[in-house]
Image (tube, rainbow, N blue to C red; front, side, top):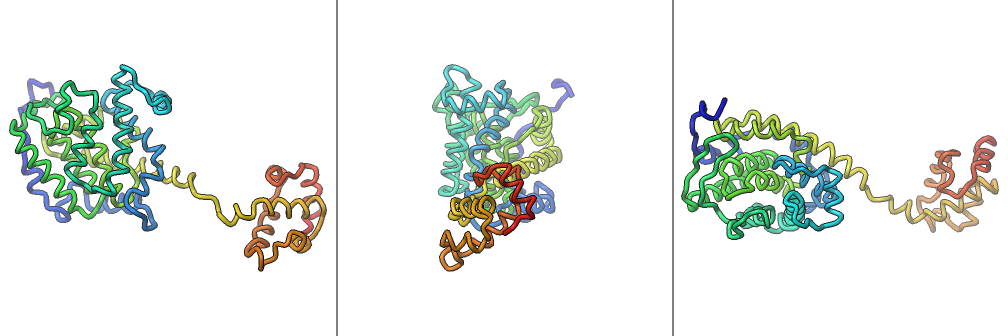
Length: 350
């Protein structure tokens, strides 16, 4: 509806005060459980391990996606190049992106130590908005000005003490929520709805939503591919009607995309097999003896003095590599195509 046809609304504190952690749910309970089981790191690890493992990709994804929702004009490729340079000049869009990068790095370092604290959230805002607010005293400070959100006539309380009290209530309740996905959604929605800071509230809420996910080693939330108009509609549903239906749909959709993205990133970063690294050179030597010199596996092992006593597991690995050896992968063992093909044509003698 056009602005003139819309009723003015104010902040309603009962939206938070009526919420009882682990009894109330902003997100359907079954959905929150499903997303948690899909996104969590299976093995037991210290808090923040998941985010740290995918940090290089997360810095680009979350910084670019969050900044794009604020109207930032940088492309994804330009963001990567900016991060490599590390300097912003006088470009406000570059400052926004670099601030996001610094803020994400801050969270990865601070969350495992501080947890979900008020000082952490306020420092998060200060880092995100550095050099973007005219008044440096407003960095991390509870605001004392009215704000208008998008096209909504939004008139929250003018008393900073009440805003500070509500911020404390939001964080205290979020700390009690056992499901980290529900906690992330609760923070994202409520920090944006409260608007505790002069500016930068939505970007603060997006990064703060990652705090419970980091604490429970769940996949980070990077708001990948979220359309700005969809995001605005989801937020307006909360601001005007305290209706989270659109926000739930958007959150679930983008978090599933984040989970899939970072599963692939984690798989691509799996550490090499230490046993294979230990035997790397000796495997090359042994396979050369078998393929080029036509020695038996047993003779090659004896010649290299790599018996089961001195090199446990070596023979099994050697036999497996010989089974997989083809002309299209023989270069890794410093074999020629012709020598490998001749060995294969001879029936792979071992």
